[in-house]
Length: 152
Image (cartoon, rainbow, N blue to C red):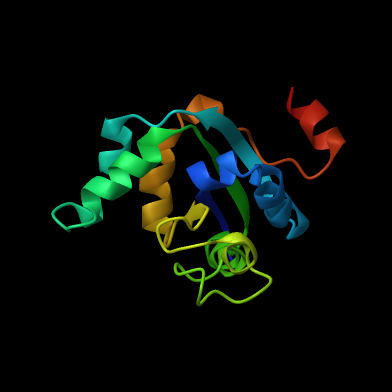
């Protein structure tokens, strides 16, 4: 098992519906460490870079418009095999097909309003984290309060 980092976005529908706390809690309860967290307005440039693999597809403009329409909450989590674990916690892209007990299975409404994004590979995670966070916005993993104090 490897310690990894991944990006999670609580998208507009999670923010508007007041589900950000629930989304965060799911990852904390799994034991993942939050390294960075922010409420932000995504710029068109950030959105286009984030969804670059979909550029040219018919739904690309809609993805960009949706993620830039309202604030989102972006966060980076770290833990053992966090990418696979986070994607398991999130559930299938289509909430109708997502397993009950996953974020999308419990709260998602449609494929276009599926609450969260999670990176799908270590390479995607590194690329996506860099779009939404500067290095100085991420904090070292600390296992105890003593670790935080010692790091200062």
